[in-house]
Length: 44
Image (tube, rainbow, N blue to C red):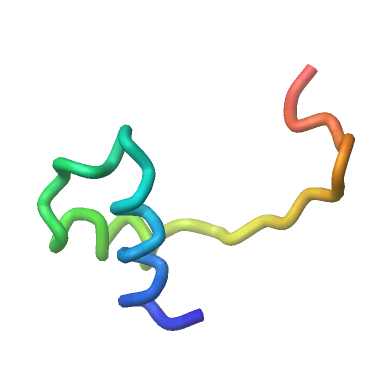
């Protein structure tokens, strides 16, 4: 997924919807993408 696609995906989340696109781009660039399976515990 490209950086711009990740920014577009983040903008669809209400928490991030009003954040400046340049800041979302920085967030996407510095973040690690993780994948979890169905039913897998995210935190304990």
